[in-house]
Length: 68
Image (cartoon, rainbow, N blue to C red; front, top):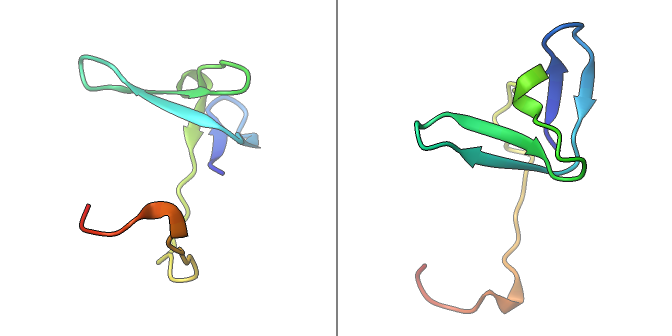
């Protein structure tokens, strides 16, 4: 779940579901899928420095075969 920091007061908040929309001019807009709040208006994404080595993924048995 992405973590965001408020641009005005520095408060930290985690949004459980977000959607990213790309406008016709190439700018991005993120919206909280639960409440419909425009996140990019008052919040900025906090990116953690990590090499992501601890993240693992497993193939779903229903994914099928072949090159995608």
